[in-house]
Image (tube, rainbow, N blue to C red; front, side):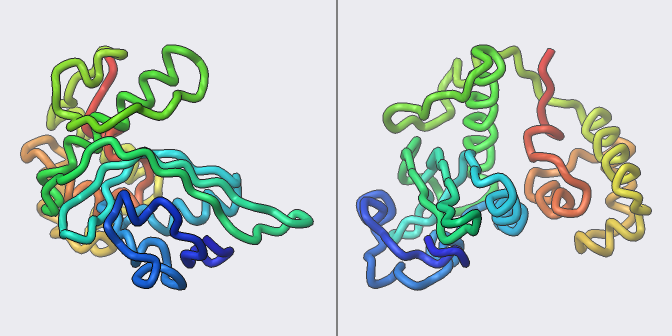
Length: 217
């Protein structure tokens, strides 16, 4: 990609995503691949410009309409301290996933936790996963003892993050496009918030999806 994240070289990506160079070249990478986690695009681009490196798991669009789960590493290319472009490496983890957001979120969360767990255990940057994997089999997150947060725990995390961001319930609800009353129920733990709604709040209060939904024992 060039310095503005427009696709400059498609290479092996056509084999992974079924999208031709003619369809990709010159267009913004996010426009071509349509990542599931669209709310994080701006933050990732800022992080790349600042640190020169981003690594994570994302579900991108395949030409046939399905989703491809990939482990992705993007590095900045610099010339005389100026960022002149970016190089990305894609390792497919699962193919043919449903296009619907809710159907693939759990796969992404489990894979992110697996990678984070490997890193915390070894103390080193984890190696990319080898070969396709549905991400739903038992033992996917066996490297750490992970449990799902209760609605009360998720609510407390939301409230703490909102207060840290110095936002009132009304302000956050307005920014995220949700009802203030619903936000109040989520923070109290009376209703469980979905991953899709969490993704609407996170750009304004920070954190990662899995930080709110899971805990290590």
